[in-house]
Image: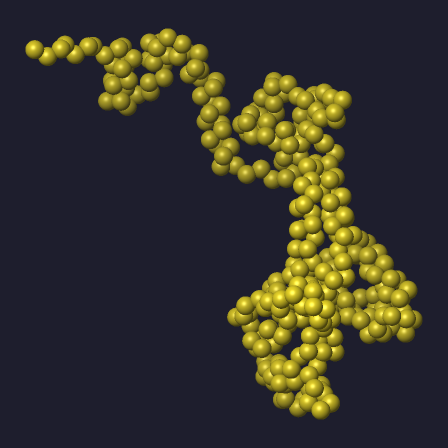
Length: 321
């Protein structure tokens, strides 16, 4: 004789009926299960739906900044410098921006420590900002006139705010005091030929990561310290990599189907054999000139520079720049 099957609880019957009819189970379950009314409140269900919508919304930096600025007038400052805000303010701002309270809380938790450090800095990066930097560089070069070469090429990236090499003020300053300082742009869409990305920024980043900054102020200080800690030996390695990449590009006829070269620079440095510049084979120079002439539709003899190495010697990369 089999044991009698117990009757299902009322909540189970309500759920089964709702599944078969396709109706919602929240009102019936809340009325049947003890304590369910406190859990499945319409307000909290609305918060869940709003959080789901917010997952699809990506806030811009300016929107995040406005959220912090909206909370800040109602916040209280602690002795530690941090700010605190009541949950009611978080909810109010969430309604104003149509964003979940959780998202507002995450944004506020990041921006409340040092609100001034989290303000977006909007500056017009134009000639008024770039030109003083170039003037400082020119002044430093002129101050070292005894050790600096007279012909110098300053290379910049292709950012639009940068001035052109034909800028009259720059040309006047670059040709003063017997110097011939010109300005050129790096090749477009060639990250390997960007000396900053190739090694300079990487060297700074590796030093910065050892400090583990916690806020923007500490990050700026870490970057400045990393920049000051760069040695001439490190910069020499970066330039050697850059020169080697240029040779690889020339050998590939201007393409990028090559592997980044490895020179074992650390081993050469320990042996005291690390060069300052690399030699460029004469055959590679002739190949580059020939390919360039074909690409520009010129004959190999037209406007072709005269490379006359003595006794078949190679060129140094400093002579090629």
